[in-house]
Amino acid sequence: MRWAERPAGEADPAVSPAEWAALAASAEPGEAARGIAGLETTPGWEPHEATADLLPVLLALVSDTGTHHRPRITRLLARLTDPDRTWSTPVPTGWEAGLTALLSDGDPLVRRQATRLVACAVRAPERALRARLEVEADRGVRHDLLRALGAHADQGVEALVEDALDEATWSGSGWLDWESRATPIGQVVRDSGELLADDPGAVAEFAAGVVARGGVEHRLAALGCAMRALGRWRDPAPVPLVGRLLDDSASRVRRWATVVAAHLGPEAREHADRLAELAGRERGSLRDAALWALARQEDPRCLPGLVELLGGDVLSFAPTRGLSPLEHAPWPFRTELIDVLIPLRAHADALLPPITECLVAPERFEAGGWRLLRVLVAWGPAALPALPALVGLLARPGRHHGLVAVTIGRLGPGAIGAADALRAVAERWAEPVERALWEIGAIPLPSLAELTSGSPQPPGTPGSFPSHDPAAAVVLRELLATSDDEHSRAGACHALWRITGDAGEVAPVLARTAAPLRDGFRAASATALRHLAEIGAADGEVLALARTLADRPDRIGHHQGWRLISPEPIAQDQDVRESASRLLGESLPW
Image (cartoon, rainbow, N blue to C red; front, side, top):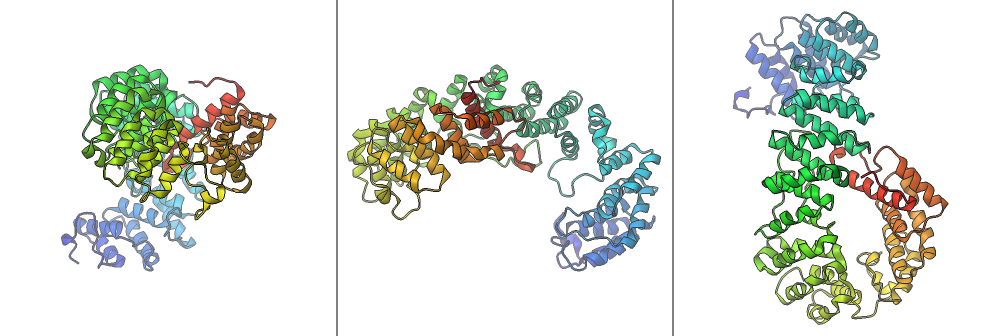
C-alpha cells in the first residue's frame, strides 16, 4: 500500500476498508494513524458490503487499551452507526454492552466520543447515559452526556455561554460535525443557539453573551445565531446585537453584520445612520453591503454610492464575497447590483442618468450593462426618460434587441414614439416586438387565442396589460375564465381593475387566490393579497386572513436548515405583513 503517494486527505481507492482497518491495528502510532485516516477519507466506503464486517474489528480495537488513537476509532464507530447517515450500519444487540462500556473508559476523550456512539447505536440508551452522568467528573464529558440526553439547554443561557467560551468544554467533543465546513467554535455556538431556537429572546441573550466575552470567531458565530433567529422569527430581540456589531473592531464582523441588516431591510431602520457612515467611509464588500442595507430601507443616502458603482467600467458588487459566518464556505446566495436597484423605483430620477450612460456605452453594455434593462422593465413608466437611449440600442447592431423591445413595451403608451424603431427589428424579434407595440398602443391588442397560440399561457405578465386599451378587459376576462395558473389569474385581476376600476369583479378571485397563505407562503397568494391591499377590497374572510397573518410570531416564508440564511424568507414575510397591515388599517412596527 503506497499511501504516502496519495494527496493529503485522500485515501488510495485501490486499498479496501479491511486493509485500512488492519493498518489501524499497527503497534506503530504513525502507521495506525494512516490506517484510521484511510478509513475516514476513503470515498464511498460507507455503502461497501464489507462495512458491517468492520464493526467487530473496530470494536475490538477500541476495547483494547493498548490500541493507538482510540478516540478516533470511537468517533469512526459512531459515524458508521449514526442512523441519520444514509449508509449507517445497525449494531447487533449483542454488541451493545461493549459499546456502553466505553462510557466508563479511562480515557475521557474516548468517553466523549462514546456519548455519541451510544446515543446513535444503542437501543434505549438513556439509562446508560444518565447512569454515567451521575458519576462523571470531567466537565467536557458531562457536556457531551447532557447533549446526548437532550438536556444541554436545561442548564440555562449563562451556562451555554460559558460552555461556548471554554475551549476545554468543546474541544474534542463527540458532537462536533463529522464533515463540517464550520470551525469548531462556529459549530459549538451554532449548536447551542439551535437548542434555544424556539425562543428568539433566549437566542439574543446567548449571542450577546458570547459577543461580549468572545473573540472574532465567537462573534461571527454569535452573529450566525442571530441570523438564524431573525430568519425564522419576527421577534426583533436579536436586532440590537446586529447594530452593536456594526461597530466591531474586526472588518469581517462589521461586514457580515451589515449583510444581516440588509436582509432585515426596514426592520433594521434604527441603525440607518450607522449604515450611512459605513457606506461613506468603507470600501469594497463592506461598502457594498452598507449600500445594499440602505437601499433595502429605501434610504436616499444609498444613492451617491450606487451612482458611483454604476459609473464603473464593470458593474462590480460583492457584499457577500468570501466565507460566511455560518459555515467555513462561500455564501450560497449572490446579490447583484440589479437586485438592489429594482426596488428603488421612487428614486428613478437620480439613478436613470448613470444607468442610461452605461447602456449607451457599447463596451460597458456588452460587458454586462445590458442586465440593467431588467431594472427598467421593473420600473415601467418611471423609466420613460431612458427611451431615447433604448431607441438608440435598437439602431445599433447587437444580440439584445429582444430584451430592449420588452423594456420599451413596459414603458407604456408614453413610448409610442419608439414604434418605428421597433418595427425595424421585427423580422428577427417578431414576438417581443409585437407585444411591445400593443403595450405602447401602436397596434390593437390581440385576442387571447392569438396570444396563447403555441403556449399554454399568454407571453409576459398579465399585470402589464395596457390599462389605456379597453379591449384588454375582454382578453383579461377570458383569461380569468380559462386559466388555472394562479400567477396569471392574480395578474389579470390587477390589470382588469386598473382598466375598469371595478373592485367587486376581481376581489373574489383575489381572495380565493390569497387564502392558501393561511397554511404557508405561496408566491401567487402573496401577490393576490398585495393586490387586495392596493385595491382596498376586503370582506370578512379576507380581514380574518389578514389578522392571522399579522399576528403569527414566525415568518411565513421561513425554511428549516441552511435556507434560514436566505434573504427571501424575510422579504417574503415583510411583503405579506405589509399587505395584511394595509388591509387592517394598522401601522407596521418598523
